[in-house]
Length: 296
Image 1 (cartoon, rainbow, N blue to C red):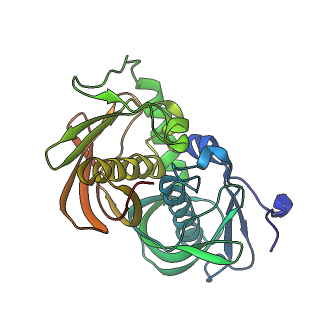
Image 2: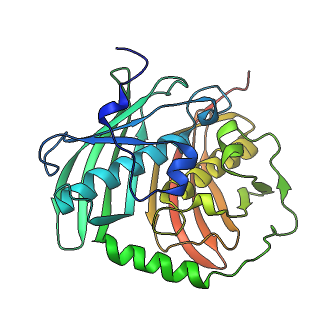
């Protein structure tokens, strides 16, 4: 299978999505009935900016692509492929089967499982050159796109301009991965049983509805869980499984922060959980299983 895909028959999301444009671009194509399995095919060309410490695709980039695929598969199943529904992730679980390679496109497809009046359920996979590297499943809430855009315009008109600063005691992660640095500067503080991280928010971290993108929040959380595992164990971490529940919408006006706990770890695995907040408001609850290896 070639390392490139002819994207001439693919589309980018309309209206523009700031975070997906910043990380991607992401592409999709719908063939046949959008309510049928395999009808939606997504592509993420990978570049150096998607890299982790080991030179592979960062887990946060894979999580963002999984979130993109879930919303495309579930959202288009809800509206029959008309792009009139705005899909918002409620929960998602991703299992990492293998590492992705930078420079080779990631592909995703899925299967709509059920659509109700408010929710859409779907599952699927992410592959690279025919090899499955991740499995995903999740639930989206679907609302009329016109309603989501009205909320965005209203919020944009009243959003204050605020100079953001991180809490005292946090140090800049100057050695963060390429992908993490591409998103924006983050700050960390070691805790007795894990770590805390904080990050000022920027407009490019939002989705097309004007609130923080789910893939952005999971990217930040994935960086946090691996950082906490590394600080706690002294070993090299990589994410094996990640699950998240979205509790509330965030904005690009104040920093976000997360506290990661490592309640248990052994010689090869660590189990972590965390809560991402903004101004005391809970945005994302998440947990992960981390593989541990000796540092080379």
